[in-house]
Image (cartoon, rainbow, N blue to C red; front, top):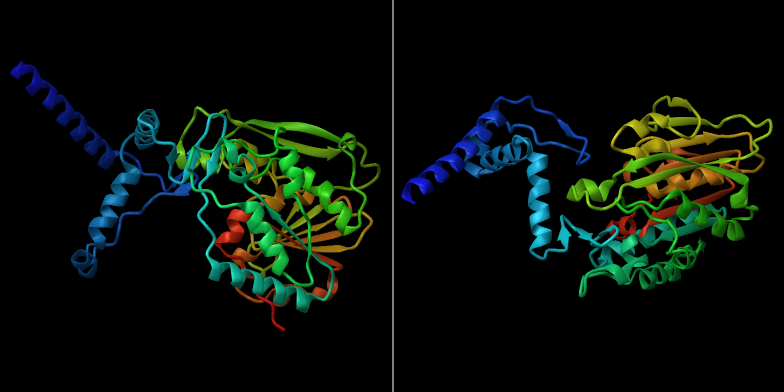
Length: 377
């Protein structure tokens, strides 16, 4: 028995040693496509970082990110955690048929700053301003969350925010999304709504914003990918949840209208990259398949169409990316500004006089983290 224990210990030690050697010798990657994040770099060796402990922490993070077969080991660990009764991994609830984000209670001071910035923008913009606050999966499917799971009341939160904004017309997408919850309106493995969810919001917005929406029958729907695993999967590597399908809706009869021209501003002060069409199909071959809608997040994107209609300014997070192709059927030009990446006042980036309306599009999780819209009065 003693000999068996010795051999067993030697085998375990050998595996750890081999893993360490392979970690050191293997080729290192800078980006994990599976987890959709950049991996840690080896820290700079300095006396100050050594004595502060930062050097050791940096080396530990580097080895953790680059350990041989790390992703397989993370999957095994997460499976074990679920088997022993855990229902949350890295802030994501593991539900029977979907993943959902654990959202903390809103911070009152952050919330007040967001509302104040919206009011300042609406006062300065002086054109019709509309706002769409979108609940997340954790709200729409709250009955599926683990018993006792912390989960703020997003409906009450949306009502609170909309009651405090001024010169802004709220668009209630909560009701329609809750009513359509049995349909495929949110991805199972990603934090975004699906194209179907965005279409429901497009219909709802029509009543407030003054356009006549196109019925579902006017679109051809294409399953552009059935292998999408999104941000929630990246955080958990939980592969027992069914992959998602990304649908693209194209108008059945465009007549003589041409494809939209999309101007991508990676820096608002620089010349844009020009792309024909609103869909970046090359992303369907990558991990980040949701970026088929306008590509990755950028500070400013302008869409020029030959549709009849005015010009729309959209202040947004990435939920807007699958919504705007529907809106583009009714506006000759739409500019999307991602306020997370713009550090100057909005009216230094665009001329408000160029636009007829503004639409704010944020999911509740993003809004709770803080939305700052700078506007020079």
